Image 1: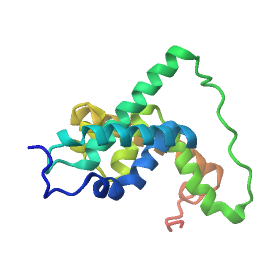
Image 2: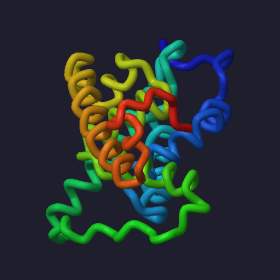
Image 3: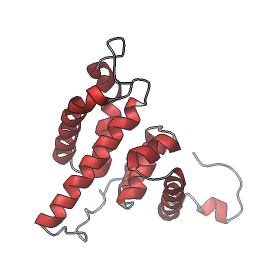
Length: 184
């Protein structure tokens, strides 16, 4: 059943999810300009496809799927054009302990951004943007079981990376020595 006049307008639905859509584009593209281009293309494509949007369907999952497909198309196009320098990762910023909380949040985001594309997309959609397994699987074009497997692997990789970070920072030292109090 296509969208009717009683349904929320495209603009209203888009406005409700625009911030989450931009965050998802940033997590995939890892570049502000590229994310903005991806978001612009997504809005244009979804506006053109909106008359075919099924009223009562999940708009957020639908538009996330459009963004994901757009990202994949751009990625494949780029692979055909120029080789990707995979070994050129930026150095982590060097700051003092006085901004540890901000740094920790940044390092968690960097750990998420360091995941392979499909793992990163699954974590962002489910853990950061709150889509259900079913909605995220639909957006990614895979079965729910595949999505859950990707999430499990991604969370395992994040646990390893963040545990190593916590050890570097001395946050796991108390646990190793048998101290049971929680660190905040």
